[in-house]
Length: 287
Image 1: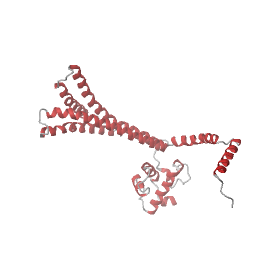
Image 2: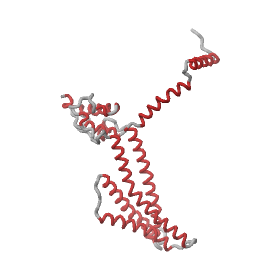
Image 3: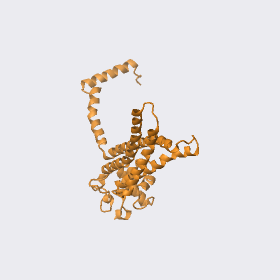
C-alpha cells in the first residue's frame, strides 16, 4: 500500500496539474469564462420565465402597498393632531372633551379613505360609481378635514409673523391632500399590478385553461405542454386526489393548496392547476 503524499508532494502535484491544464488550454480562468455564457443564458431564461416575472411583480406590488399605506398613515397621524386641537378648543387636558376630540379626525378620515378604496375596487371590475352624492360626500369630507386642520393655524400667533403663518397654513393644506391622493391611487395601482400578473400567468389569448385536460385531450397533447414540469406533476397529484376521493370534482385552488400541496409552496400554482383540472373526471379520462 503506497504511503500518503507529503504536503510538498501534494503542492507539486497541483502545480503539475495546473501546468498541464495551461498547456491544454484549460486554465482555471479559461474554464471560468467558458462557463459564464452558459450560466448567463440559463439565468436569462429563468428571469424571462412567466412565473418568475409574476413573482417579481407580486413582490413589487407588496412594496408599493407598504409605501402607499405608510404615506397614508403618516399623513393621517399629522392631521389628527391639529384636528384634535380644533375640536378640543379650550378644554382641559385629559378632560372628557379633550379625549373625545382625538376621535374626530379618525371619524372623518376612515370614512373618506374607505369610500375612496371602495370606489377603486369597484372601478377595477368595471363598476363605475357615478352617483353625484358619492362625489359630494368625498369632497365634503376632504373639505371638512382640511378646514379643521387649517383652522388652528389661522388663529395661532407665530413668532415669525405672517410669512411663518402662511407657510404653516400651506403645509396643513398639503398633508390632507397627500392622504386623499394616497387613498385614491392605492387600489388603482394594485389592480394594475394584478392585471399585469394575470397577463403573465394566463395562457395566450387571455382564455382560462379549461379544456386543457378534458378527456378529448390526451396527456401528450399540445395543450398539456403549456404547463411546466412542476405544474404537470401537481396536476397529476390533483387528478389522483380526485380519483381517490380526497378532492371533489372541479376543486378550488384553495382546496388544492391545502390538501394536495399541504399548505406549502406558491399558492398561485394551486389556482392555476384548479383552472387546468376543471372539467376532468376519472371516468371520462378513462374513456
